[in-house]
Length: 345
Image (cartoon, rainbow, N blue to C red; front, side, top):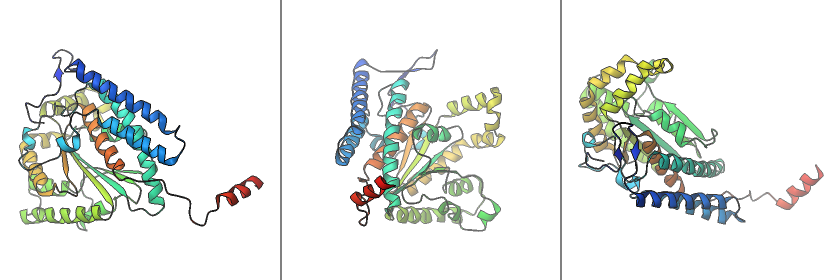
């Protein structure tokens, strides 16, 4: 993900991303075809156990698309500098946009399957749930990720919330109060577009709170996320790394397209002028709050298809690794008696 970690080449005239070689293209095509075939076998399975086994196998085949799993390649480790991250790179994925879109389509179908499984378990009392935190500079593609990764998801079971400037009511409480109100219920997935980390980064950059106040929030956040994970909530924290050049391109497109005027705010330019200050603040956030229970992933985001594919992979494998099974009938339910009553209804 550093500057020399380029996995694809760009055509200077078209800006299109091309495959680096035929062998990697064949490998990806083969893995996606095998995953697609296995997905087709899931509904044909005769038993629930076979369905779960085929779903797990299809997920493994999808993961085989990556030369190195994003969970390993993109997880923040001490010594990594966000300023050195290359937003235009595609670490671990040797394909092109077409391959990435095909992967997302297949992966989203399996995310929807695991989402229903987790929701069913939540209804029956399981504490399993998932929180996804999306952070990044303006125009890094946070909203698009939600639309594409969950394209086949069931709205019943997904909670999306965007955090803006705290309201007067929210300021009357501790900074985590408004976050706790939006956490996922058992069986649900919550997606935060910005989060409690804004309440550390913004005062760091603009000095709106004394330093001892916002620095004291690191320990509070770590304790909060540790307890959340211990209670059965998986946490995926993603920072979308967009380059200044790509951000500029998106800002200009918003000024040139009347249908995108609503996306443009002059405050975005103010933040852009303090880019280095923001990067320094986020660097400290990663160093202080990337933990075993809630690690940070730094995801290159100039190529939107790539960042969406990464999030899809992280989400699907997290759900798969919960090793859930379908809840059985309640002990007081007699299937034969239920069929008898239905036949006579």
